Length: 62
Ligand SMILES: [Zn+2]
Image (cartoon, rainbow, N blue to C red):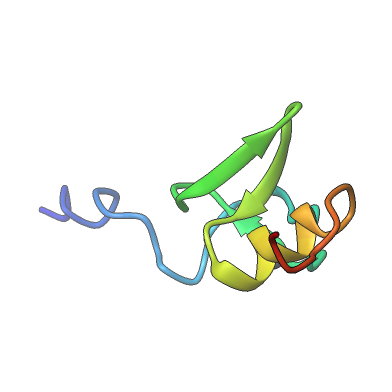
């Protein structure tokens, strides 16, 4: 009886579903991400900030 052997996914077999628009790193199935026009962005400060820097200008408000 080995009915449990096919239950849980092997953590080694994470499925890559795309790559991050900002850092270019792999995005895995089940990972929390931002979707931008059908593409992925990691849910992390550096990736979001890096992405925004493509079209926004950082400045001092005033
Ligand atoms: Zn990223």
